[in-house]
Image 1 (cartoon, helix red, strand yellow):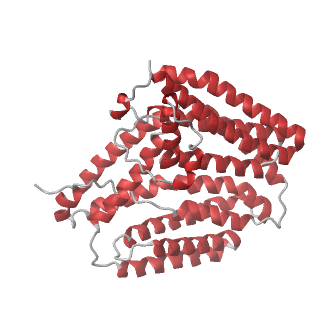
Image 2 (cartoon, one colour):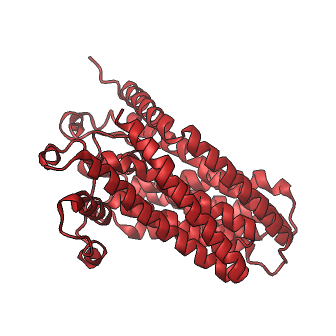
Image 3 (tube, rainbow, N blue to C red):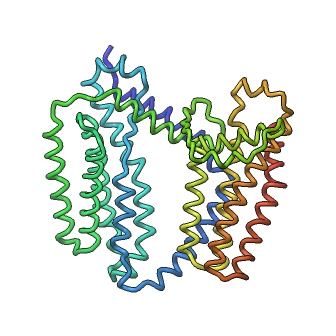
Length: 405
């Protein structure tokens, strides 16, 4: 029986999309969509007003190059390989060429929406500063599609090399940034042919360099497992992911955060939640990312009402996405041996979440004071703290009760 590599990829890709769509239903729930609509609306409103204030001296092109390079050069190959493939499919390596071609094409199409959104968002700023017309959007989009396709190809081919390291990523970033600057800053009549010539020449060079090289199965499988694990960690913030492989770090330098917790029976879960937060990458990373993003938005987006909207938006997002942490240890049998009433577990978790949100509210309030003066900043701080109180004393207990019904 002939081995059908294309059929294998179609089967795995169908299973992968089914799994992703199942988790996306939990991630893009009504609550989050409502908050995202409000956040996007506030951002569009503030962004349109900000664009009107721009002058020709604003570095719009360098800013676009940075954003678009990040969206294009950060490329992953969705090989959908599994650990047993290194044993059972290695004998079919030549036939697997068609499988990997399909994987590269699927990876390209699944990632183009990112830089299309970035380009569409940057066009008003680009037109306002440079004086070019919006008609440049489609030629620019065509060139960026080719640069993205080039990045996918280079990423795949360099994964065959022995020295697979950040050198090739750095090379892709530099070439992509240079070509993006070329087509954004200069006349398209000659900049597009030059960009195409560079892409074609580098493609031919890489094809000759990797001719005859075999696939590094273990490396590809490790990369695929890491990619899926990143998605599972994100999905785990909204629902339980049974096969999630979490990562833990000691972080001894943060021990001072939970040392003040008293040594008492009713404080056992307070210590557990605090230590879990500090040592578990998905929770610590989520909190830091949301806080930093909110801080930068509040710093660069001026306005009393926008400050309130973004503060409440990110406090809500943080609190809402931390609620699944309550069930983080449900699969641990040893936890059931604790001679502690489950009431202390829930109460400690709500108190722990309240501390995290109050810290955010205070930080956002300080930014509000710096931007809007003492009176305006204190009002923002008061609104933030009032929202945290309602969220943790009313909404979170209701959600916790619903979880354990």
